[in-house]
Image (tube, rainbow, N blue to C red):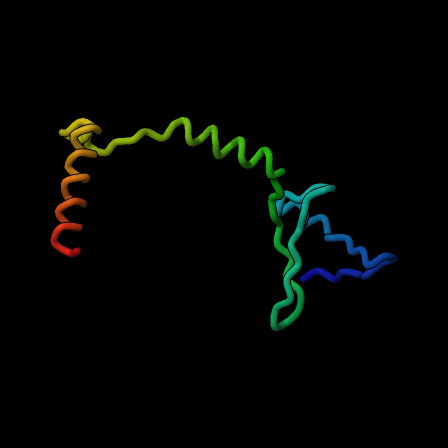
Length: 93
């Protein structure tokens, strides 16, 4: 267990062994959470929103539609749907 001292402006210094164990360097972010027995500090990764969206769009380029191709043309599908709608309206009017 490591002992930390609260310094000016509420700053704390993590002991070197903990920084090494969790690969923490200056400028890294930690999330502070109140838990039943005290304060839990967890390392987090912060990504700029624009960069995150760029990664999402880049990943989407590798997504392929693998569903089976319809046996009917789009026009035939629309005609069949129109017939079904007319029939429904005729029987439920």
